[in-house]
Each structure stands twice: as C-alpha cells, then as structure tokens.
Image (cartoon, rainbow over all chains, first blue to last red; front, side):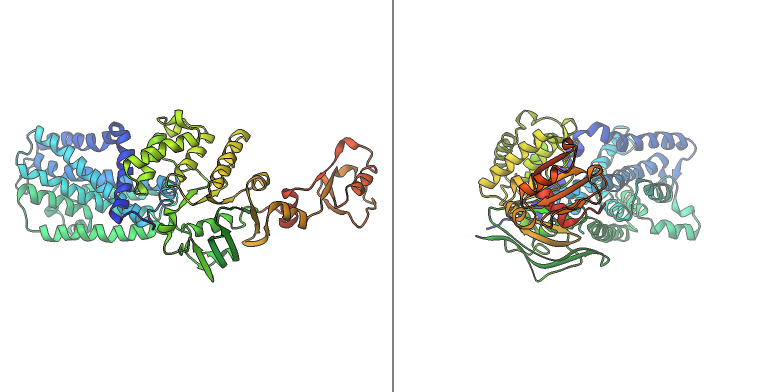
Length: 256
Length: 305
C-alpha cells in the first residue's frame, strides 16, 4: 500500500538536488576549481618548468599537469562537504528538510558523496580538456583520468564529512584546510618527486590520501602500474571507511 | 475512529542526561486536529520529532506507533504518509519556488507529470501562483512559511505535523494559514500542531494537551478544559489599586504579580461587586477566562528559557 521509493531513486533524488542547486550558479561556483589549477599549472609548470626539465623521467609540465587534474577534484569535493555540509547541517537546515521526506540520513549522505564524486569527475575533465588544448597531453587514455577524479572526489567527501561531524563553528575548518589539505597538496607528489624525500617523510606521504590519487593519475597517463593495485585499494577502502564514519557521525547530529 | 498516533508511556532523554519526556501517553485520531501546548522545554518538539523519526535515541515506551508503524524503524513509511512543517523554514535559498517543490516531489519518487500537476494545485491553494518563478531569497517571511506548508503537502499527506506554524507572522498571514489548516482538516487530514498562541489552539484544535517539563498535565477539548478547570470570569486590576488588607469572598481566587492582580470567580456579579471597591475603574476589566489563563494557572509564571 505504501510505496517508499526504491533506494536508488532516493539516492538519485538527493544527487539531483545537489546538481540543481550547484548548476544554478555554475559560473561563480565553477570558477575557482576550474581556474586555480590552470593558474598553478601556468605559474609553477611553465615558470619552474624552465629550470626543471624532468622529474621521474617525466617532462615537468606533464608531471604537474597529471597532478592538478586530480587536486582540483580533491579541493572541490573537500570544500563542498566541509563548508557546504556545515551550512546545510546548521544555518540552512537543508538536511532537516530533506529527511522530513522518505529519504534517510544514509540515503542523503550517500547522494551527497556521489555528487562530490561527480564534481570531481567534471572538474578533472574540464582541466584535462585545457591540458589537451595546450597539447600538454595527447594520448586518448587520459580520458580515464576523470574516473580517478570521481574516486578522489568521493574519498575526500567522506573525509570532509567525517571532519565536519566534529566541527562546532566555522573557524574550526582552518585546522582542516590549512593544517591538512594545503600541506597535503605539496607533500603528495604534486610538485616534486616523493622519491627524493627521506624515509620518514616518504612514509608520511604514503599515508596521505592524495598521494594515491595522484599516483593513479600518473599510472594511467605514463603507464606506471607498479603501485596501481595498492593505490586503487587504498582509495576504495578510503571511500568506504570515511564514508561510513562520516555518515554515522553526521547522523548523530541530525537524529536526536 | 482510527488511531493514527498511539503512544503509551513514552520517555526520552538526551544522552541519558537531560530528560525530555516522562511517560507520555497520547492518542491522535484520524481527522482530528490535536494541539500540543506548553512552555519552551516542555517536550512538544521532541515528541513530534519522535513521531516522524527525527529523534530516536534514548527512548523507552510501552507502545509507539504511527499509522501502525514504529517510527524508530519504519520512519520512511511514516514520512510517505506525512507532511512535516518544521519550526524554522529550510527551503533551498538558491532555487525558485517551483524548483523547491519539484525537487521535494522527487524525494517522494513522484513522476514528473504528476508532480507538475500537484505543484500547480498547491501554488493555487497557498496563493503563491504568481511567485512560482521567484527565488526564495526574494520572498517575505509569510510567503516562505506558506511555501513550506505547500511543500509539506506535496505527497497529499494523511497526517500533517506543524511545529509552531505561525510564529513570527503577521495576523493576515496567520489567519490565512488557519483557513488552510481548517480546509485540510475538512478534507480529512489529521493534524498535529504545537503552538505558543492560545488563540491558535482555541481556533483550530479539537483537542489539546498542555505539557510542562516533559509531562502531559492535562488533555481535552479547549472549551471543556476551560469550563472544567478554571473559573468562568476574571477581574483584572492594576496591582497599585489593590489594598493589602482587601477582604475578598472565599469564592474568589486571587493571583497577583507586581503589575496586575487577577480575581477569578464563577460568579460574574461577585466580581462586579468587588470591582466597585477600586476607585479607578479605568484600570480594571472583567472578562471571561480563556485558554491563556488556564495555561498560566497550570504551568505557572516561572520563565523556562
């Protein structure tokens, strides 16, 4: 008699809500994740690239390029599920509205994680298209990279949800952004090779999630498959683990 | 009559520390309008949240069912049949009126055609038709409230839960919303609401309960409650005019604050006689007691916030 919509339909309806709200102001929303990696690529890649020819046997501009396609996915989804989630959870009470319909907290946050992954996919793709236009890459297999962008987005959505579940005021996020995301950006093999680091620093770099996402990108572009299984396992386990923890902790804030 | 909500001995605390509800029992029947009244912190909102599955932890009860379902486990089924209007509006600010409703209909799995038709009906019903393409930011408080109500009706609910539906609204909007609630009730929708406005409860509710500190202290039809639990008339006088040694008959009950003194009695004439003892008749009034008098009598004058 009562037809609760199917699970996929419920999750999709949440994804659809996020897509609609985001694309409402697509240009202002998309400006930063699209332009920042390009500026970085221009400044560091072309600038420093004049002095550094190759890293790990890869032309420097390609070394940087293969990383910024991924870091844009990280930043866009990490911010979405940090600041964005906090606003939806507290000031705007968007979540309260959604879970007043037949959508559970789990459905809601899985939809949100998938949306963050989708953003990761599209921003990876957008930056990739620029790199192709600039003829930094030419091989067609780079079109697999946005899928790594998706996984990166989904993993950092989970991480951000988990972090946000502890956050009481907006200011707390600076520990996350300046204390975690920004340093990780530099210590995950984005601008320099991890191989030149001392062993303890290399161990730390291996723990950082972004390292694996960037290595997956390079595996695909430059056929460096040595760590592929390890990296992809790390990312998938990361999505499941942080997704699970994040959902459970946010749930405690939504359900009394 | 079907029992839409059945609750027996429901208790709830927050983290096992703050007790929110103490052994509440309550039934709401199909087609009636039931009001929960009480000072802040009485447990009204908590009780509603349990009914639609927004509060689940640290509860104990003998019976708890809504449409025969357990809200702790089958809340999605309950929400398919229910419309929920929260205390604070939570519309999507970036989207238009239509988009808000359309996206909400998706959560219920409604097909596109059906939801477009329903949205048109609802915009008509809540008098928001001209605003269909306006962004939420540009709406007044009253319009937002009406839209929140329209949104809660998207699934043609059999039960409507309203948490302080008219708080902070002007009298025009309030009366508009009351009319709509009456209309829905006449269509057979069961209504559960909380309010701080005694007038609202009096106007809309078939039955109310007054809660205080997590307990239900009284329940019944508003008129009957007044009739059975408080004197029929009250004389209000500025406390400055009341002499400390004033002798009053035993049939009159006195309640005083620094500014106003109230004399309650079943007998109008005896209050009228009492009134002659105060020299300034501009500062006094004799009137029928109302729900607010009863509310204050039962819950006291202590501030709960």
